[in-house]
Length: 114
Image 1 (cartoon, rainbow, N blue to C red):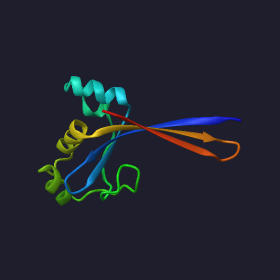
Image 2 (image 1 turned 45 degrees about the horizontal axis):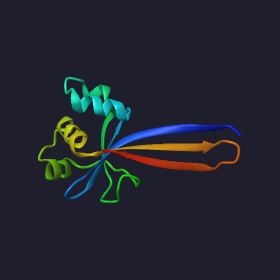
Image 3 (image 1 turned 135 degrees about the horizontal axis):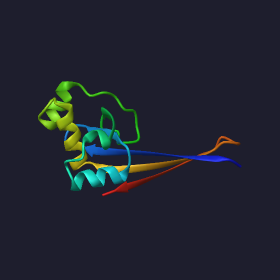
């Protein structure tokens, strides 16, 4: 029975007013960046996009936050600064999705990295 494994890595930031998510290349890239800030964000972040989950956690619908939402939560509208704050204060989550191709069954396992 053929199957395919798909890994998705994101950083979930639990804010005062909302929850935010960014997608990253892999867990190792985030850990290396935390130890060496000279590593460009482009080698860590997958598509410089910030998502807000409206306090529904990291697994639910992702919307684009307004500039005012970013300002209220992070004290800045600069998305690069917000990405850094999320990387610094968020929890890295790796989700492994196993897809059984012949019968359509899906299995999902999430691992949090502190």
